[in-house]
Structure formats: structure tokens, C-alpha cells
Image (tube, rainbow over the protein chains, first blue to last red):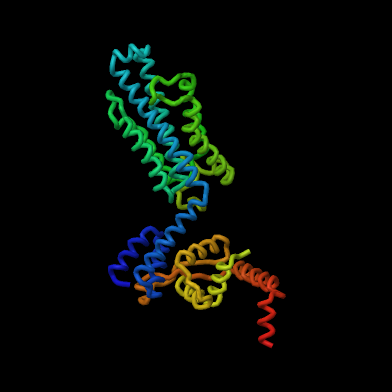
Length: 260
Length: 109
């Protein structure tokens, strides 16, 4: 293997875990494999590793159960929050909407809190469930964003209004990657808060195509919060109730096993 | 029960004893079977067997021969030995009376 070839193989091996990379490159050098054979061997191992991850339900749940549907719905919610804010700032729009400044502010606050709650819990579930297949979840979020961006035709709002959900979602993913599970009491409080905030939306109809979806669709955004309750409850049952203090009950992610 | 490749890997590792690591096991399998053994198949099978508790692995020392890279050492556990023995017994039992076994016995005698 030439030095140039070896650098190619080492670059491909960066897709492997550190210890495995060390062992694999050493084996290839010891066996005197050619660059091409080495590259094929490393890429074959990377492919097998990735395929093994996708045998589990976790990346499928994170990608197609949370990221893809939530990205579409949360872009709608982001626009709705932006529209509510615009309504408050413009007296004519406020008059048309038959809202007072006070009630309009409460509606905006509810929607903004819901957006943050939905995005954060969705992101947390994606980060905690599919750490090593996060790239696929990111791609599944990216494609609906591009789709909606290309079809955005609202002159009074900036295109960036579509992406208000991204910040809390990324924060949620970051927390989900670091932390294993939420403490049960916090998970229940969060799920109840989100469900209660959804109540005013249950009876309201959509005014625009980007308005919050009907309440049945909102459940698609609500279930990550209840999933966190279910997983926190299971973790609590295993570890014993009240075994730890603070918001998080499971310690750091590295302590967990069997997570993809 | 073990798969065919799992059995080969455990048997090769057991035969190598304290010198069992990735490249040596691969070499042993290839020279015995005459078939190519890919790095991908080797390491994913080692991981699977370790998860089942049939192998134990750890990172060994780095050598000059390997460009200063460490080895992934492998040891067969007692559970692994039992699983390999079960596989071998099953293959031996099912092969009794097979034409190729009878021929081999006949030619040997």
C-alpha cells in the first residue's frame, strides 16, 4: 500500500470507531493488502456497520416517525407563530382577526410555547433514539425544508419564518445525545403542559394553509412528549423510583447499552 | 446454534490461543478454507459473537509490523467453546451415513 493509498484508506476508516479503525488499518498493513483491497475492505465494514444499525426499529422511528412528519407540521406551526406576531404588530390585521391585544398576546404565547415544546421533545427523541443514524434524520428534515422553501409564497413574511422550530429542535437533539432519559416527574409535567397548551387549538379551524393543522394532526407532534414519559417510566421501574435527583434520571449517554 | 462462519471464527481463534487477533484469525480462516474472508465479515461477526458472550475482545499492543497500530485481541469464552462443540456434534451427527462421509471412510480403510 503506497502512502497516498494509505491516506485514502485512513480517510475511509474515519467512518469507523477509533479502536476499530486502529485494528482494521493495522490488519490491512500486516496483511500487505493493496490500496484498492484495503479501501473495499474498510468500506465494506462501514456498510455492514450501518446496515446493522438499520436492523433496529430506532432509526426508522426517529426518521420516519418523528423527523419527517414533524418537520412538515412544525414548519406550519412556525408560520402560524410568525403570522400571530405580525397580527399583533399590525392594528388592521388585529381588527380583522377579532382579537384584542391581550387575547392576541396570549394566543401568540401559547403557540410559541407549543412550538418550543413540540420541537424540543421531537428533537430530544430523535437524539436519544438514533444517535449513530442522526445523519439520516438530518437528511429527512432537510428535504421537507427545501420543499417548503421552494413553495413559499407569503409576501408579508420572511422565508426564515419557516424555520423557527429548528433552534429548539437542535437544542432538543443536543440534549437527547448527551442525556439518556428524563426524570419521570419532569417528563409528565412537560407532556401535560404540551397537551394542555394544545386544548385551545382543538376546536379552531385553519385560516390559512400554513395555519396549525387540525388537532388530529397535532397528536403527531404531541406523541414524542408522551414517548418520553413512557421511556422515563420504564427507566424508573428498572432503576427504582426516585433513584436520582435533578431533571435527568439516566446519567450520560455513554453509560447506556444497545442504543443505535 | 452457531452459523458456519461463526464456527470457523471461533475454531480459528481457539486454535491460535493467545495469538488470536483480527489479521491472524483471517489468515487462519483463509488458509484453511481456501476462501476469501473480508474484514467486514470478520469484525461484524466478532462483534456479534462478543455480544452473545462467546468471545471476549480487547485492544492489544501496537507493533512495527502493523505500522504502529494496535491489535484487537480475541479469546474464546467457555460459553463459546460449548457453542462450538454443540455445532460440531450436530454436524457430525447429521453427517452420519452421508455418501461423502461413507466414501471418505471407505477410501481411508
